[in-house]
Image (cartoon, rainbow, N blue to C red; front, side):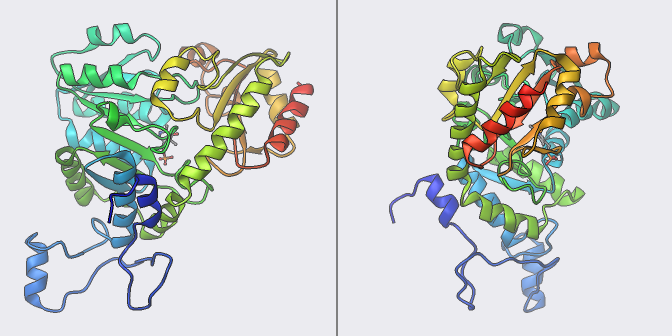
Length: 390
Ligand SMILES: *Cc1c(COP(=O)(O)O)cnc(C)c1O
């Protein structure tokens, strides 16, 4: 058969049909696998065959999810993990050693920040931050012991865009591993490997599940690097449950069509809110007003499903906005079929001082909207009526 488009493959690939002749993919909810005889078992343990042994490191349902993600990202190989954070952590632990240095963009997911700051230094692994909006300063920050460039684009929650072509060229010039958290865009919108990334990590918990049901993570990238990460995961056990893998694999069948709708809804809402009198600024990558709009258009197929804006009234207005919403959910997740609003200054970053918050670009009236799949006017109307009250 002719080579299929990755989007088709993500819909059609699945575990080989069993004798039951099921159409939807089966789920192999089992901890271990059987052998017919001692010789087959010996050969499996000697790595002479690819037979499944134990679900900590091989399971057909988990493998099906990995195979789809590898195709979508245009990667050579992949590993699935229990959460996005275990995926991020595994890339650091498997590939870095005492004395190594990571160059990271400063706007990274909160727990990634904590790994870099609190845990890696205990193992002699250093990091330094560079700003997403100051790419001119990145090269000077590379040290002789730098081993990896780590970044997120778009960033959370500020929606800054980093030029992947620039980062790919910089990593190549200095022979560094480029590791990109592609959670916000998903592979149907942006493929970092096409721009030179060696590894892509995901929280599958977000858009990949897309319905707020299960946690999961995945790493896709160069074969050699992935093989080191696989070995780390095999031995330390941050494994993805076959049940979660089944849910996530089924979700990939609808990822492309969902992301298109999320992005269409988000673009319409962003366009209509942009000049609202209660809002001092609004950011959405596919609006011409976004500071890195040109980079977004170059590397992303659409603007994604997240919008952020700043309420003129500051922190009190943020609380008032959340309290006035009638439909949007107040919850600590994103990437769901149901729209979600969050106000970082009074919630996720509420324990920091205002000065500390500003350092990580959490302004007092910052609102993040994860735009769902509801009818667009219903989402917009709920936001508009809440804005009237703050
Ligand atoms: C949520 C998130 C993570 C962590 O993923 P979990 O599945 O919650 O462990 C990492 N990076 C980004 C950008 C995220 O949004």
